[in-house]
Structure formats: structure tokens, C-alpha cells
Image 1: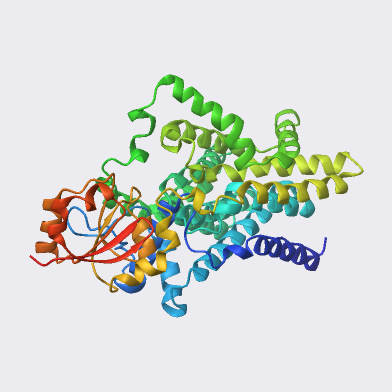
Image 2: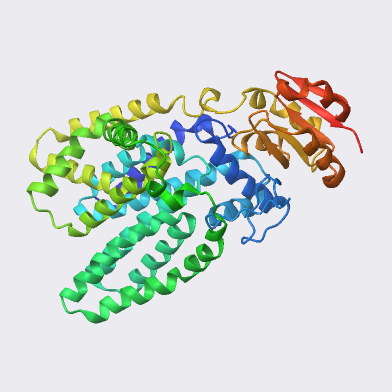
Length: 480
């Protein structure tokens, strides 16, 4: 296949991606995992408006020590979006297009990775296309989650470390180290991809190529120094984060743990990471690797480390945190592509079968994910979204506010574009309100809690009800 034809097919793949998501471009944050997306967008907003120092990612919540610094993953993606928005303005469409470009970078990386493994352009193109239609990737690749950047960089790391293992050119080792760094900075668990380098390190030792083994070690360690420094600095502040404890602070019964394993085996992996149309090539790929002794020994360790990760974090991932499983996609679709190549070389009418698989994958993924970005999948009061513009404009920009209720800490505040003090479960002692008025100069409050704001003793704090929209009241608070 000529380069022009390959370019043309890649353009078609990207165009299909864009057209399938076209309705999504101007839609603000809502749907599955709006809490994590809103948290990310608060990082972006604060980089744009207040503090562009990449070491100081900020959120909206001032509870506690009245400081909204929140250092978690290194915010390279959030900061990059913010720098673009400093030029373009803060439209959500800028975020969506930025994520689309990241997504197609992942698809392009998968094409090159699959081509390197199989040696055939057509199978690699189809494998990359089907990867693009993995339901979790299809949805999250257009949402502001740093996991997407981590996956993109992880895919390119795999491509370059395999290139280095093949020909020992230093440039590929440097690039693999750089992408491993970016992937780890974006999300710490992606450091597990380095198991592939560990395999090649051991392999070089066994081949008595000690120089290559030393190079792999030195370059990876050298490039990972920034990530090591960042996480050593910020992780002591992650008190209570379940990622740190995983199953070692297991709060579910053994029976529930087994049910979670069953859920992921029967529903998550076959239907959301893969999809019904790719079951045949996936199972064929498993057969190819298992029975045909394909020389992909490095892949076994990669599969093993991701399965270990799932086991250790299973109670944290639960049934809902499907985007935590993005690290599985590279090897899942490597197996899919090996299956496609086996079918291509052994069956005469494979092109018709591939067309049916590709078309079915589009339909399946579109139908499965069509509700994922709707209000019905958003886990807070829907009036916040329905009346977002009026609620936002009711309070002057830049004013600190009390917000009740928001179990996510981020979504309500993001929609009304206000920072301040966020509470949930109808819980807000009245003396706290007085303290915030006196000591933090808070003058406004959003509330959807009738349990609180219909209390007679709450009224002494209220100067006026500025706005009522649906179940949400906006109060101007008295000075004390």
C-alpha cells in the first residue's frame, strides 16, 4: 500500500471520529464522571485566570485551610489546554478539539504500533480504527481527563521501545523514555508500562548486550526523575486517597469482590473495553498468540502487569470507574489486530467480513454510548445544568460563595462558575455560615437544600433571595 493511500485511509478514520462526535463539540461538561471532568476544568480555569504556574494546579474548593491548591497528577494536559485558551478564549469547544487531537494522536500511535507488530498496513489500519471505536476510548477521548494523555504517551512509548529493541538506535530509546515520562506524569499508574522496558533489559542481559541494558536503565531513570520528584512531593498530601491503598484497605466483602471480578469479566471487558463486533478477531488473536507461538514475549509481562493492577485496584475501580481501565486497550487491540491478520491470510472473503465488523462497531459503540453524555448520567441535581446560565449570572464574577449540595465538590461550582465553600448531604451548621460571612467575606449562597434554607433560624443570615430556579435558591447573605 502506498504512502498516499495510507494517508488517505488515516484521514478517513479521523474524519469518521470527528463526524461521530460532531454534536459533542459545543456541549459543556455533563454525563458520566462529570465530577472528574469538572475537577480537571477547574485546573484549566485557574491556570487561565489566576495562576499559570504549572506547579500550582487549583480547584474551586476553599474548605479547610482556605487554599484551593490541589496537587494530584502533574497537570501537563490541564496547563496545555489553559495556554491554548489564553489565546482563544475559554470556549468548551477548544477543550473538545484539543482532546480530539490527542485522541487521533493515540489512534495514529496505535496504527504505527500495530504495523510494527504485524508488518501489514491493512490490518494495522483496521486495528487502529476498531481501537478508536472501543466504547471507553470513543467517549473519554473527547472529555477532559488526564488519563487520555497518559494513554496517548503510553502508546507512543510502546512504539519507540519496540523500535529500540529492534535496531538499538539511541534516538528511539530517548523518545521512549520521554513518552514514558509524560505518561507517568499525567497518571502515575501508567508507570506500569515500563514492564516492557524491564523485559528488554533482561533480554539484553541474557544476550550479553550489557551496553544496551545499561542504556535502557540509565535513560529511563534519568527521564523519570521529574516524575519521581513530583510524586514524592505531592503524595504525602493524598491522605485518604483509595488509589494508595487499593485492596489493602478492602471495605467490601469477599463475596462482593468476587462479584466485581465477574462484572469485569462478563460486562466491562467484552462490552465497554472491547465490543461485540470485535469478539471474533479478539478471540482469534488469543488463539494466534497461544497456539501459533507468535514472538511477542514482551506482551505477556504487559498483560500480566495490567491484570495485577486491576486486581490491586478492583475495589477502587468498582463498576463505575471504567476510564481507569484505559491501560488495557493497547494489548487488547494488539490481540484484535493479530486476529484480523490471521483472518486476512486464511480466508478469501475477509474484506467483506472486515467491512461488516467495522460497520457493526460504529453502530454498536454509537448506540451503547449515546446516553453517556446526557443529564440522566450526571450524578447531581439536574437543575444546576438546566439553569446554569441564570445561576451563574445571579452572583458577580469572582465572589466566593457557599454551595449546598454538591457531593462531587466540583460539578455545581463549575456550572455556576464560582469558587468557595462546598457542602453536601444537607449538612451545614449555621455557625459555619456566620464564620464564613465574618472571616471570609462570603456574601452569597447557592442552595438546593430545603432542609437547611427553610429553617427559621437560617433566615437571620439572609438579606434577600436573589433568584429561584427550579429547586435552587440563590441568597444574598447579611453582613455581620
